Image 1: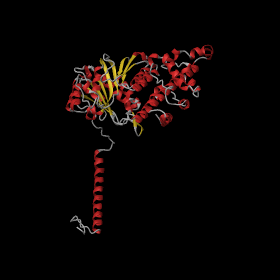
Image 2: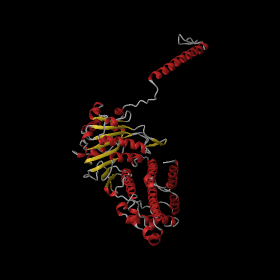
Image 3: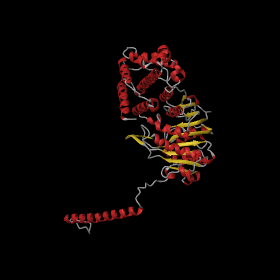
Image 4: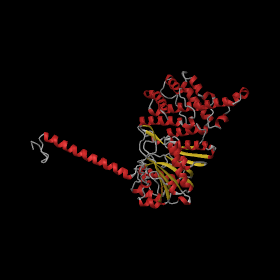
Length: 517
């Protein structure tokens, strides 16, 4: 996204930031969250209304106009929430200067909860009559949020998710936490969803954050002309605030999902779920995850209990446990899991020997908005096709990125297509020589991995690409020889000059001392 969008987000932040003197961070993030949601659903609703007016014959509009424009199903069929009149932003804006504007906002939320109980019950923060803000403060925020223009194609661009990402980064900075726990960059979720080729079935994310994987999966179905209802969405999130965002993110797309609050380590809300697709971006290198609380013979820890100072392999085993027999998993993981030793190394060895891993991508640093560390993407299957057995596709994408700013990079659509194509070729059983690309991609065997000490770092397998500039070797050596002769001549001249300077200072170069030595 361009500079204009960042300025746009900054303006919203400054408006919210003005409230900090009156409310705590944990309160004002809910204020902002609710207002952004209310503004967005009205924006999308109004956009659809204009589209209906522009595409409908004038005579039909004259006769059935109001019924057509207020037909709930017309909106819902397009993945847009129908917004009742007294919940629309225009109504909120018209009443912004009323002394009971807090009550009006909470009533708006009541209306939406009644209209969409499954999607929105207890989701939108209903706090506007309780917070320590004057009606004038709320009016100020409403007027600022009224200036938001989400633009054309807002659903495809996920401007809503981008605003959430920005605000979450700011909120978590203020609270001293990592925003990367909540929002997985769009290019990462899109890449993983495309490699898994998510279609119909059950998709599960046990650390779902703001629901980015679900959004990318729904958009893939929409692009391919498939019904959203074909995909059953299941998610778990430990933080109530982030759970609300995930629910809202599904609601604005007219989708439903079974998203539950709880600690996935020790309070699995879906113990019997076996999903066709498991997707996730868990907390990295989570220390104090509770290894001592794991029950004896817990089937989730088939390969061993990871150390308490790092929960990476607790998550990896969680994903394996929740996979259906023919299911596939794609997830983000801290790079340490590729090569760590000790208990983690033993667990990794067993997972490799059970032939569960079919792909690893090394990603560049700075993909996350608030976290700069590089990550890797893992792809697992419980049952591989015959031609993929005991083989893993490694991709080194560390240099494959487009900078957005000094602190953030993304994968472009071209980058995503290139990586997805390699996986498609691998899964289709194409000749490995066509898949392999020095410095970028390599199909390795488990025997190769064993020889490398069960380390999964893609750089170990793809090799190093030597750029060919088209200059013959003999010509290069001739140039290098000339350059070396020139440098040796310059060194000789400099040595003579240094001797002259030391002699002028009455130093004896042979003794290593001077007149006072």
